[in-house]
Image 1 (spheres, rainbow, N blue to C red):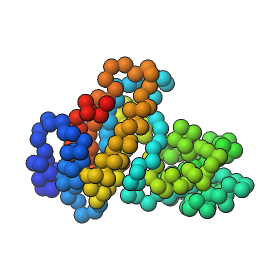
Image 2: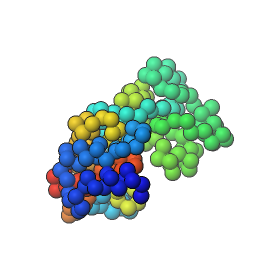
Image 3: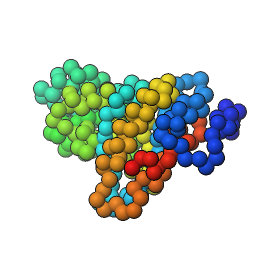
Image 4: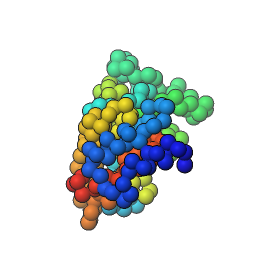
Length: 228
């Protein structure tokens, strides 16, 4: 471990569970890289992602955005093309972009939005977009007839949360430069959405653990009992 990381670890009490506000204050202090580090949260849930009735997935617009410029690709046709462009989409079209992804391995975008009439075509991209977490879905609001609104939300800081195979959700909640207060607002919004998405089939403790960390910094444990 580098010296900066070791110095950051010294700021933390071993095995302590911090209140969310205190944890986010510390995560800013432990962010010592020369670039503006992304702050992420990692939430372990008491569910089993192998069961369809225990999936936790959705999307939420963070009040302070993510601090990242989001490049949007909209797969649509007809009058929705102009609507998507007017909303600020970076790339708008149909088959030409599907072919570009499949034939040229083109991935110069962060979010894919599709209108429902394009899903027959978009299905061909499942094998390449799926593993990258880029496949549009109705649950995330990225398959929608209102592509303009989806573009606006993506640009404003809409993020998708979903369980991985180990029942953990990993999500960015902003940049270290945001400071603890803005990160706290984003944290509360995301955690509120995750708690609201609790499956009826989930039994026992829902939020098992929560850790916040900057890109290069140590993980800081949040007191899950304070999260609901």
